[in-house]
Image (tube, rainbow, N blue to C red):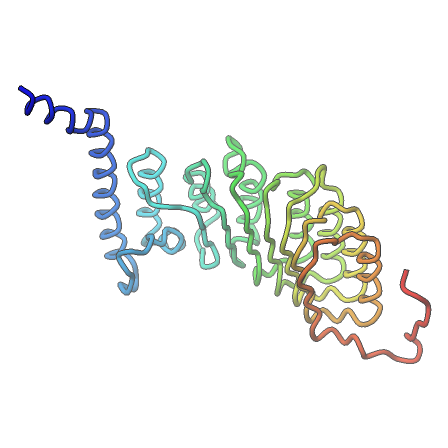
Length: 293
């Protein structure tokens, strides 16, 4: 009798058995899904230990349907595959399919912490779909996942009009947990930087933004001046990294930025990139011996 009792006590409870069985089932499902993905990918050189690249499948017409199936499994809790990062830099399908993809994303902690976009997503009919996602999540039924921390819009061919729409996302406080924003290599020009700066300064609350990359945006001194004024609103005091490389800001632009530093607008700034900005290239007419204020 004691042996039977000991055996019973040492056996895991029924609930634990069910939980273990459920986890094993999910792992088996993930293994099958990973195998399907490897067959569907154009290149088969993918480690089985890596997470499947849903972004790559969704960006291609042949893999789009499979991507939706995977997202459906994840939403129903029948797969543990991660969706922490969504890359749309290679997306080339219609705006309707972009909306379908974004509306199919699961919600919850850890979902879409990083979003990378590209030229096709940031123009024409696709841009309003992207902005709707950033505002309320696609379809308007849910807010964008609060876990979104990194937004990469580099090399997306954004111009002033596009940035004005994007600025509204910040002015209404729809990205309250964003830590990193990359707008590098977009021909924004001074007017585009002004539009973006207005969005930052009019945010209803302080932004936790720690990294802002604006390299090669053709900002010039005028655009840097607008950014400096936005920083003085002290809505981005958490900023630690600021990249303004190759913007032709010249000494006038540097003076604008220095005024923001003196106003203690960026008290936590650790990394400032100003290379190739013609900072020493000044004509006699541009020389200004007045103290920086």
